[in-house]
Image (tube, rainbow, N blue to C red; front, side, top):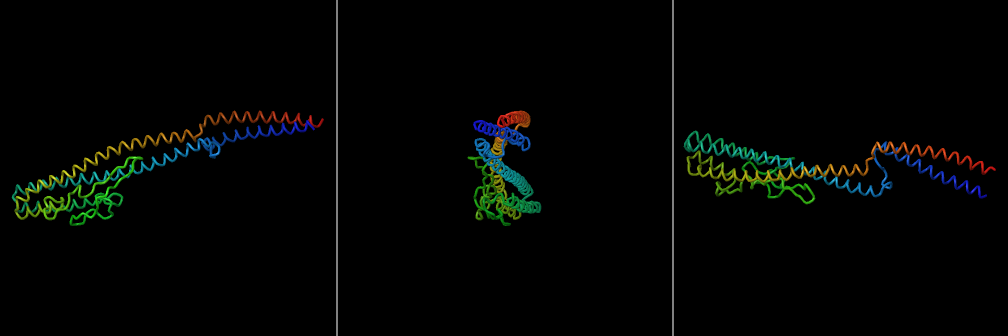
Length: 299
C-alpha cells in the first residue's frame, strides 16, 4: 500500500515538472513567433501596467504632434498671406509716389489709381485666404473674413493648438490686426481697403494733399503687417522647439514600450534550446524512473 502511494506521488511530481518544462518551451516558441515577451496581461501584470502607461503617453504625444502639424500649416499659410499683403502694399505705395510725381489728376495718376484699386481687390482676396476650408483671418467665425467691399465678417477669436500638456499656441491673426479697423468717416485712419480707395479717388480728382497723406497711411498699415509677421515668426520658433521635443519624447517612449514588450530574438532562441534540452532530459528521466517504479509496484 505504501509503495502505491509513493508511485502516485512520484507520477504527480513528474507531471508537474514536465508541464512546467513544456510551458517554458512554449513560452520561448511564442516569443520567437510573435516577437513579444508576453501576450496575455496575466503573464506579467507589472509590465502590463507599465506598458499601458507608456502606450497612453505615446497616444498623447502623437496627438500633440498632429496638433503641431496643423499649427505649422496655419502659420505657414498666414506667413505667406502676410508676405503677399506686404508686397501688395509696397506696390501701392510706389504707385502713389508715381502718381504724385506725375501730378494728381493727370492721365498717369488715373492709371496709377486704377492699379491701386486692383491691388485693393487683390488684398481683399489675400485677406480671405483659407487653410483647411477655414478663413485664416476671420477668427473663429466660419464666414469669409471680408466681403467684396472690404467689410470684416469675422470675430476676434483665437485659433489655438495644444502642442504639449501646458503649452497652447495661437496660430491665427485676425483681420483688423492685420488690415486695420474700419473707419468710414476717416478712411486714412481706417482699414487698408478704405485707405487705398480714398487714395485712388484723390489721385484721380487731383487732391494732392489727401494722396500725400495716403503715404503715411500705407506705412502705418504695412507696420501692422510686419508686426504680425514678427508674431508669426516667434510662434514658428516655439513650434519648431516643440516639434523637436515631441519627436524626442516619441522615440524615448517607443523605446520604453519596446523594452517592456519586445523579445530579444537571440536570447529567445538560446532560451528555447536550453528549455528543449532540459525538457528532453526530464522526459528521459521520467521514463526511466516511471519504468522502475512500475516494476517495483508489480513485485
